[in-house]
Length: 221
Image (cartoon, rainbow, N blue to C red):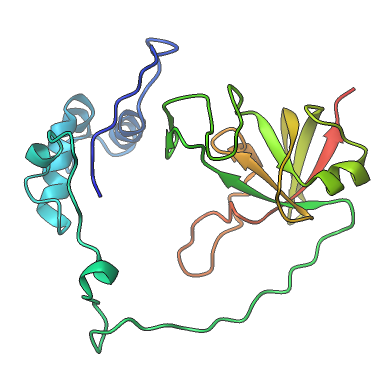
C-alpha cells in the first residue's frame, strides 16, 4: 500500500535534511552529476518518483497516485496468488536455527521502530504500540533481567555492543520494563544505530544484523 506522509512538527533546524537530500548530496559529492543528476533529484522529489514509476511494477503514474489521500495498492504476490517462481507457486524453505551463545550478563539487542516512524523519519514522539510516550532514548528490558542486573525503571545506562573485538557505545538510555523475552533487549533506531557493527551482516542480503547485536548495560551513576 502506498500513500504520502507529512510530519506535524516544525524542523528542529533549517540545516536538517531529509533522507533523499542526504543520499543525493552524497551521490553528488562522490560521483558528480554527469551520469545521475543528483542535484535535480535533491531539489525536486517528483523526478525521483518518475524514475521509480519507470522501473518498479505498480508505481506507474506515481506522481498522480501519490496525490490521492486514500493512497493506492501495490502488487502483492500472496494476495493476488501470483508468484515469480519456477513453478508459479509459493515455495518454502527450511533453514536450521542458529545456535548463538553469549556471555553471562550480556544481552541480544534488536533495533525497532515506533508507531509514528517511517525508516529514520520520525513523525511523533509517542509509541502507541508499546505505551511509551515522549521518549525515544530507551532500552526495553524484561523485568526479571532488570532485577538480576540490579536495574530499576527509568534508570540511566550506557549500552556497549561487541563484535570481533570491537566495542561500540551509546550513552544515556533509560531502562523501561517490557514483556520481552529474557536475555533480549530492544532499542529504537536511529538512536541506537551507533551500536550496529558495520561488518556484522546477513549472509545473503548483506544487510546489517541490527536484530542480533550482543550488548551489555552499564549503570550511569
